[in-house]
Length: 117
Image (cartoon, rainbow, N blue to C red):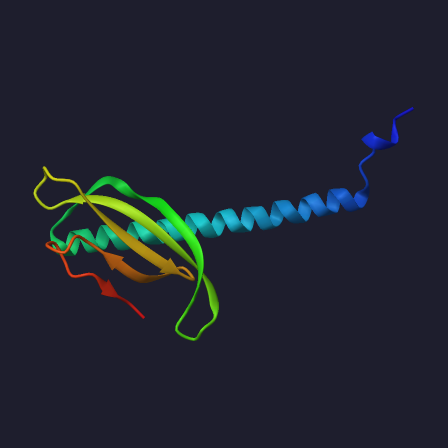
């Protein structure tokens, strides 16, 4: 005979299934945003004649903010390292909102930071 505490109900299994689906969807969106950031950063470095170091971006943070229409949106920040001369290491950033580039920044002597709307 099994104890009542070890019985898993159908509703618990359904709830766990829903959590798993939402978790997988969230993970997919995170990875998709990271790939978008990698692509934008690589293109930006190439156009500016800079070398993207380590070949990838790193997660810098996430926050809830408002877009220009005052809607709440997630803003993801990714950091990256680059070099202008092959010796020095500088850090830049890219900010994504709703999966689109909001702004990208390099050190002032390498490029003017710009904002995209």
